Structure formats: C-alpha cells, structure tokens
View (cartoon, rainbow, N blue to C red):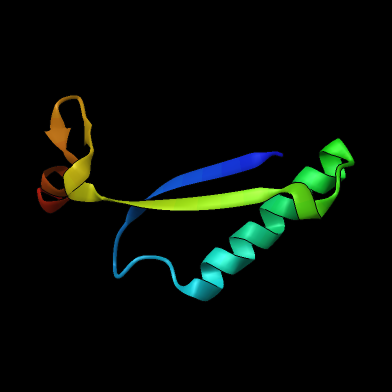
Length: 68
C-alpha cells in the first residue's frame, strides 16, 4: 500500500479541510497516473507542523519569520 506523507507548516490558521482534500485527491491522481495502480490503495497523510516545532540553521522558524 503506497503512503504519501505531506509535511507542511501550520500557518495562518492552517490548511482548510477543503484544501487538504483537494491536495489528497490530486496527489492520489498523480500516483495513479504515474504508477498505474488503483486509487483505493493510496493513502495520503498530511502533517501540519507548528513553526515553533522546527528550525533551520538552529533557528526556530517562528522567530525567523517574526524578524522579517
């Protein structure tokens, strides 16, 4: 069973349910088109990560974005 995992930042209230469903639909369709496998086997997970919970170059993203 293919599992497509999307990790993205949770910003400005996060993605809406509609956006997540559209993303999952389009990723599933792309997988089916490229690999010629059934859509019923394709799982999409979406993880929204707080910008407080990841860093680049040792700096928390929230702090980086607040400086701009």
